Length: 188
Image 1: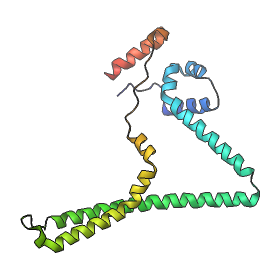
Image 2: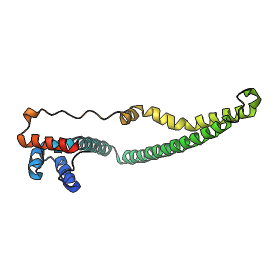
Image 3: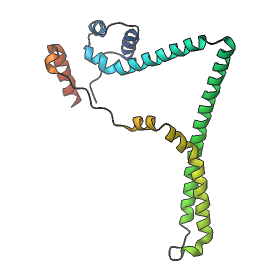
Image 4: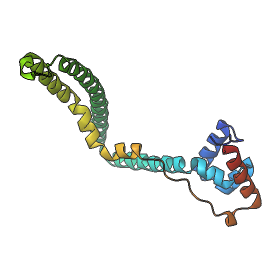
């Protein structure tokens, strides 16, 4: 675990807000007495994501405003329905996966009843395993379809973190280099 920041969460939130408002990282680093690299490392990805989403929201609002009033109402109504469908499908996937889990457990308990020496004597148990397994697979279908539809997002969530950026020590000031060395020593 790295060294604790000398800035509070409130100060970091202030820095983020001010970066979003267009203030220069260099000026903020000077004001808060931290390195520019510390600010960039801590907030640059999140700030860029916020900017991207904000631009998408603005573009969407402009597109909606360009529509006639009845079409705006229809667009808002459709968006609300799509959100509800998404929420309901997510819930159905969750419950379906839980049901599939339970049915698979029941099928597994039926497997224990099968006579290994003569499995055909255990016809009722075999039928029970088959029916329970089929119901479990059917119950899991919504969850599996949602995962398949979001395959790229799921893969991104499961990827390893990217390697940390490297720093060219010759381009750092003595103070910044000392701060990095101290942080490294504290982390070890």
